[in-house]
Length: 126
Length: 163
View: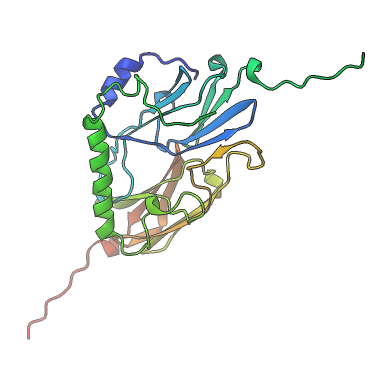
């Protein structure tokens, strides 16, 4: 999965009617890249869209509804799609963003552009 | 790097204050009120405990059919090998540990909302189950435990005595 989405507008229209949830995220800045972990329990792997546009990283994930038979006794969490977006700022290489989904956690790695990384300039003796 | 929550044109494909937002709000309020009266066993619901420091009580979902009791538990990022499930006749205990996914030895800025560390929940079961007939499955960050009700426990005839 990359920064491309097939048809975000139509997908968004389908989701708009259902409840959405704001997933918990962890962000760690490693200097050369920013790593984001998002908790998306229950989300389908192929229902996750990540987009990066104008310095804003957006995340939308489809969660299938509760469909198992039975009577609910206790419900502490809602089931619905996840949606969150936040501004990372400029200086990132959108084409190199990677996203990996495992055990209900999406890990996104957003590398900084080489041009904005601090460079060590070695001093040469004349 | 600035991390300001930002609503993009795309994310707000719906109007601000539309039904989706309202539904979210209503959902949260329902959870609050439902939880307030139906949770005498725990000092605080999972979502009220602080993300950092406080104990982690993963959110659960309990349902039943005629023959089984099903408990689901949100455990994103937990290695299934680190989850312990134990069942007695009237109680299910889910415990384990979530190891931090991100390296903690960074000098960089870290923003953290997810839960890490040990967790444990004891869930009283609505009916007696057969501890030998339990199936636990972990998929996409959600643990599902299905327990078969013990036939003796499903119904008990209480004789009415005439005086």
